[in-house]
Length: 353
Image (tube, rainbow, N blue to C red):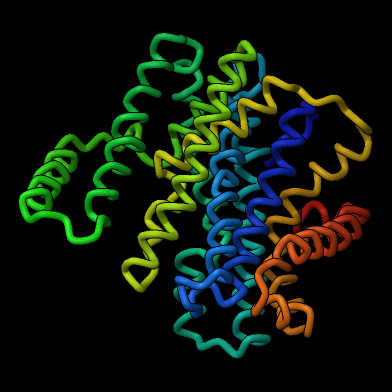
């Protein structure tokens, strides 16, 4: 999210991803956790939330496509003084802003504020996570240059970070599984824990996949196949989450995880579709302005959701989820307007964005 040299399809991906982030946060603000989970209203929220799960993986893939590219000039000094410094400064400042806002504007207690300060306030978790990937980038760049090693890394990630954990989660979540299946699940989980493959777990797979996908040259036939898998992944995320939740009578959203195999399919299809199609620049200046505002929109938008949430428009949408796309556009537009104003000041842009 922090790269300034414009690559058109990456900019379009940034915009898609920020719309996905806003969609998820708007959906959860519309009484997502306090509804009849078998109702159409909740299932509509589930549809938009599940459909938008590609957002964070795509952001990570964008970073991988840039930072792991051997043609990208990235010395250790530049990595620490420019990119990591920006992430750390933004994180510390926005942590203070949100914790102060939570305490003074929302009337929060000091214990919760302290927990936020020690951990991360809500959506700000992304910043230390991406900083961690930046820290290991000098180790991953030589690996990414060797295609065979890169594919081996991604194969391990596919098996142990995405496929097996998702399969085990499905078995665990399935209504009334046989006892022998539950015992087998426990044994497999214990074995996976002993393997301790932390190197390929978490978000590192998406980071490496971002560079791998950025170098892909796909035929139309293969692209259609990837897109079909993406639709399958989105459908499974939405359909299984909705069905399992309705059957259980309480939320079963494990498949919403960004490390779900189904979310991997959805995210890969989104990235590869725009990478292959390489949509034309309809206005380089406008696209650059919009994409350059994504980081600020990401940092700011929860405040706008909170204050718009007190208006009659939001209250109406809480009982009719069909309004959700309009609310997403409203949050994006109002966040963009504020970020645009902030970017006019070099001082504010430097410290807040």
